[in-house]
Image 1 (cartoon, helix red, strand yellow):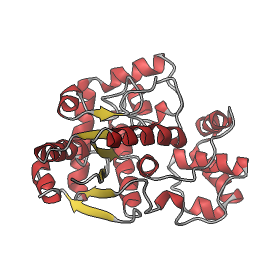
Image 2 (tube, rainbow, N blue to C red):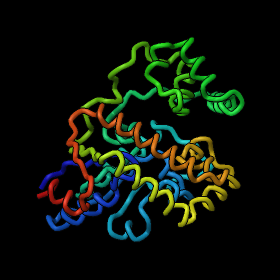
Image 3 (cartoon, rainbow, N blue to C red):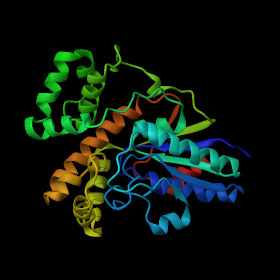
Length: 297
């Protein structure tokens, strides 16, 4: 019996959870005990399951999911902290004879779950908050322009619309920890802590965007705006507020949430192409059960 990890990565809305459930059924038919481990930066937070697309109660009855809703929405979290949590969960599942299925759409968190990474240090208290305040006051283009002045090679590799990466790059520059060279780094290492089969899901772009728009509409109908208002009132942390659509739904702008989600999916697909050793599977127009049968015949 294989003790290999399964890891599923793909853009938001592509059907990762559905595939994980279908794979779990096939693994149980083989006598294995699958357990999902979320590799999503925002699904960690309690109180935002609809907005973050976390597995719902019915799906979690079909397949146990770990690292979903485990942190208060007021806490901050880094990739380094997540890595410690994920490694502990994966190792415990393996030690108990289970088969981990790592499921994620956050590229850095996926790699943090699977590998020992040389992650950059966390910022000192207050630095990220000051930079985010500047984003609100001056606008993101001004901070990207600053990054271009102080680290032009890094700036050229960062999407000027990506608040997280612009702010993180300026943090690292301020701490003297910004890598001197861009390109392949430990974040893309093929060396994993355990034998891992990494499956990257793709979909024809227009079909994906249609699914994203339908998914956002379903989230709103299910109460995502209420989640956001409650989290805001509770004092959601800066990292929790990075959930796609958080600010848009506070403003009641569903169309902006859809546009943000489509842009994020495009970035996820770009990141996916950088991953070494992946099996790329096109799921356009395919049922999850059929894809699972292809992967586990």
